[in-house]
Image 1: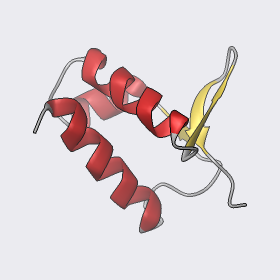
Image 2: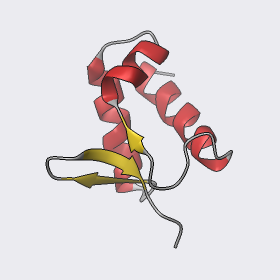
Image 3: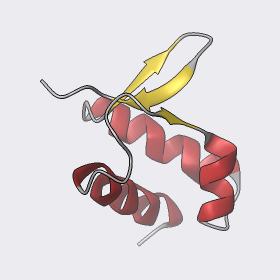
Image 4: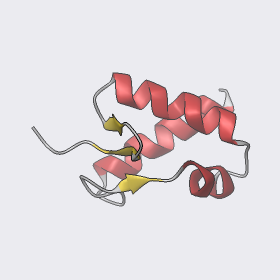
Length: 69
């Protein structure tokens, strides 16, 4: 399992458990520090979660947890 995969799995769980509330902003540098890695695997994980619809990218605002449908 790659660093990216571990980050994706952890973030999915955090979103499911409500540790990352709907609409909350995601900061790449904070996640990189939390997972003891560089920004690159964090960015890759965020792109995957955005493609799944769990995260929403906003121009000039970053990434946030998607609102519930």
